[in-house]
Length: 557
Image 1 (cartoon, rainbow, N blue to C red):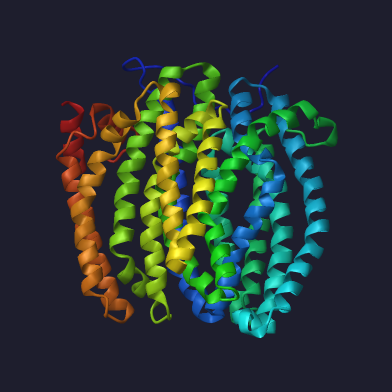
Image 2: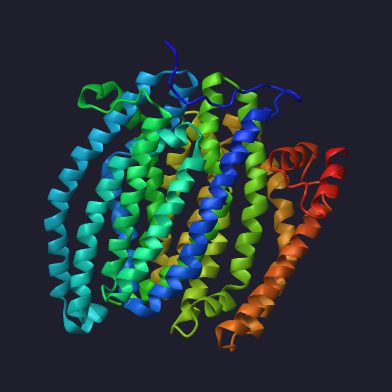
């Protein structure tokens, strides 16, 4: 039977044995560039436009209530059995083998499973939210803090209820969005996300200016989701014209396969939830009712989270590529992707974290202006950004084990991070107070990272020490001078007020870090001839002034 799946790039082996093929490199590079454009736009919109616009208008307490929603929906997501995390892997594998009916079974099974689960969660969650809000409303006035405001309490009830509804609806759409990911068509996904972001921007401003307050943020999210969800469904049927979504395509064996893969990733999801979201909940519980502290914590966390996504751009493109290569049995090429991926993640992630750690003070003051308590947000950013280095470095290895259908290692790493975070948080909050929360998170990331690199040795045949020496050492050394200057600028400008002066400090130290880092890295042999060819021929960066000559020398070295 002739395949109706839109044709994919044919893989042709060239070059030294074990190298990633040209077509695979181009697919990864294309998808990475699409992801980079989408994530960059998303980060700029959130950091430079929406957050500085919203926080002064709704207040830190309401912003803290809004920040709690991501943790709330994260915990609710633990009930979905991890089904959605398996979509991309299996769709990519079936597409590589031209098994179109299997894609229909995956999409139909996932869609109707989440439809049923969504109805159940809303039926149970709605009264549970009322019980929680009622309990908060009965707290003693001395303990209630910001929640003494009846309006804020009502807003929190509204946000939790309808965030639950929106989350359940997005789960139903995730099966259709996964078709684009599995077929490695990230360009389509990013165009949809860009259009949805414009809708969100306009809706946010409109609802805030018309007096809807923090509720307007949820209205804007719903409008953006409506656009993105409808486009995802249409795109799925256009990419796979033979796609059918019907209850008759539901298969228990398919659900079993998705669950068999996904439940292990749930452990990792829980660990990520504890590391990246639960901090805010703990801050709200330990310092009961002080939602403005949650808001300040979110301000520091926001920059750290966005910077963490930068090196992760490559990984979203690698997941379907690894699944495709694994389906073809090309083990050497998988090893190549792992080695190169770790190097590139370190090259991007380490200087980004160094800049945030060193320049957190002027960054916060240039970003938010005269908002009270920014020193607290800056310290949260410094601590979390340092820990995120350890979080992003195992990314290519996680991609490898997920693409090969072996999520057990990621599950164990997640368990280590989760248990360490809980234990350290209990210890350090008691000993150090508020800042013990981010410190515990950072330490747990380093413990999990170290275990994962060692545990991956039998899978890859590569020693953890060799990976760290070859991929991590030089970026750390090269980022050190820039980190020192940024930290000095932070200290000298600690009493500086106003956005413009702090922005000048930020730009000056950032420029020095970038120039010094790239200069040191260019003088090393961190990038080899393969890397130079990849950057020139696939990413087409040889036209950048000064880059082309260096790449040509490195390519023929």
